[in-house]
Image (cartoon, rainbow, N blue to C red; front, top):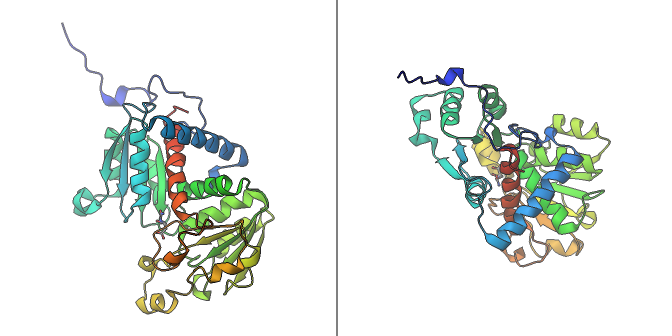
Length: 330
Ligand code: NCD
């Protein structure tokens, strides 16, 4: 008898049996928040609610049993990387961790497309963080498997913005018509680039407080303005703090500066502490994507308005929802 071994090339496009092929976002890349509208955000958040419920009730369950995630990080990460690992493992899947590309063939000069082509042979979904803007889109061009952008340089950080929005909805009970003040490094901070775009779907008023050197990029402001959103720029917080519903604090992104003196000149521009927060409302929240390097004093951590630690936990449920969706199980 002649054994026939079908070559990989002859196989039909990758559509595993048992996946819900009509599920929203099945097999899709998550590259930018521009992919989302109010309807699919509501859907993602409903799944995230279910994930939260399941984690509280049973901890770990088998929705993604047999699925494999490659976590490919060319930049440092604690929260994004470990929350994707936790999300995959709580869903019964497993993870190939490449948290330190120095020890992979990247250090031998392998290109991003080739590294992606390699990992997709072994994994069902790839989470990518990379220092260059547009790298996730480049990876997606070469990949057959879904790519999830976990931060591309100063470009976007869509999964962070989703968890930020989920945090606001969970903490304040609604998303419409909020006054959101973004503080710190609005130029290099990718989280605020994504979050401003997402908030533009909800009629928010956006205040941008930063040193002149670190203002929100014009292209983001123009895009947000196109949605009819009010935006205003400030150098100091005092004028806008009393009206603020969400104060979103960011770290000055030291690694993006070419001139160390310029970093020294702007670092520590703003420090939120309990005394400053006396001017803010009681029913507002303070968020931060973290890590913080002095922008929020630890003396504020016990204030009920300090939502930044809860924000990290919401991130787990949102990332579980996204993985289940792109892998066709939600
Ligand atoms: C952010 C990032 O990597 O852009 N961190 C995160 O993912 N929570 C923010 C930062 O590094 O300042």
